[in-house]
Length: 205
Length: 303
Image 1 (cartoon, helix red, strand yellow):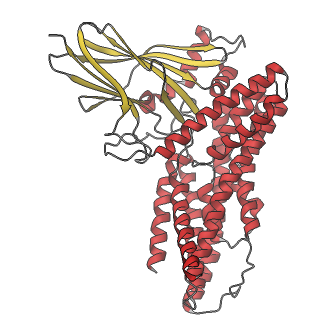
Image 2 (cartoon, chains in turn green, red):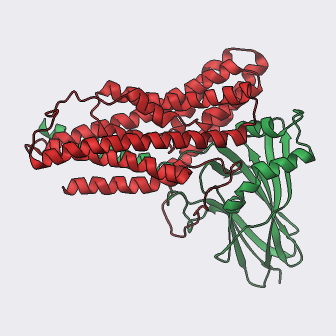
Image 3 (cartoon, rainbow over the protein chains, first blue to last red):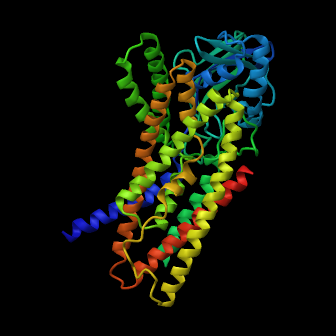
């Protein structure tokens, strides 16, 4: 009986300490969900950058539509897209647009983007933009790792299950790519390895 | 004393860790207050629980949106039962993260000696106020004032945070002073005023829960907005309340587990004559210190 009592107490104590930790570090707290597709674009020299498609969940889409689809026609016109860009996209510049790129192991800071567009279709919002990231190809392989995450974890970003990444104009290069967890990077206080696109390419001999 | 130092260390770590995520705001629609520190380069084991919970939340979020749409299009009550279940599950998972007052609730419960019912009541009230605040926010801002949600949500959240954290800091200071006084008395060997009275109650659980839960829950706000966009105000309110009930379950579980842990720790210390009382007063003093620290730290971060 005594053994049982002590056993229970120890279990409760472990649970207690566990909860103390849990209450501080469990961060399953995203409010916005994005499914993303990337298109890696090559030019004559090597990699030119990547096109991004972000498909938002219906609830966030609805919130943006309520505020920025001024004429309530369920379509975002160019003038409305400009407002969306200013009021619901440009702020994430502070977080490098959620892109954390490493070229041969060295961080590449994402500061710019081009061709931003926001599309509202069937009540679902998507952002489309291009991130310039020039990496010249050599006869030997170069590696580019593209991880996407929101450092505040307000947003959860997943790669799409179907066609998560594509290549454009890659015929002149030997290219290997895979999407997997980046074991060398940890986020959210060391709790998660983000998923990333690993790309290796070199000139065709 | 070693245990006390260990607990103090654990809670200290919690305070530091808690500050950043709990203050997360919508990064798309609000200017960040400070630059985020985001990339670390050490390897770590993946937290599959966290990944799984996030994916479940995403799935439930999608399901909820689809069911609201179905309810609107079919004018049927059929999807509602399932919708309520999904909303409840969403609330349970949603409150598993920071920003829902759990750490404060834990510290507050540790600083008091509530009975089980009062602990459950306190945990539930935090979640319900958090959800109701979201519902009221949408009703007032969107339906009555007809203002934009995204910018206003950030402003209102900031204002309520300032109010909430100020009140929490004051509450913590009050508990700290009272418990500190009792702790010093027991260490000196004086008889405490309450003489170990086990009927010492949690002070104003409703008001304390209101302090913590006043900040509108963004999850509830988004669900409400979706329902409103389809002119389903009643359904939106019902879903908001259901999500709050789900959150209440999570927060209450945390509170009950902490209460059990505290009770067990005191039972284990019972074999030493004065230790339980000293230990309990020490826990209460540290908890008061933590509540005040949370309040001031969060307040400083918001301002």
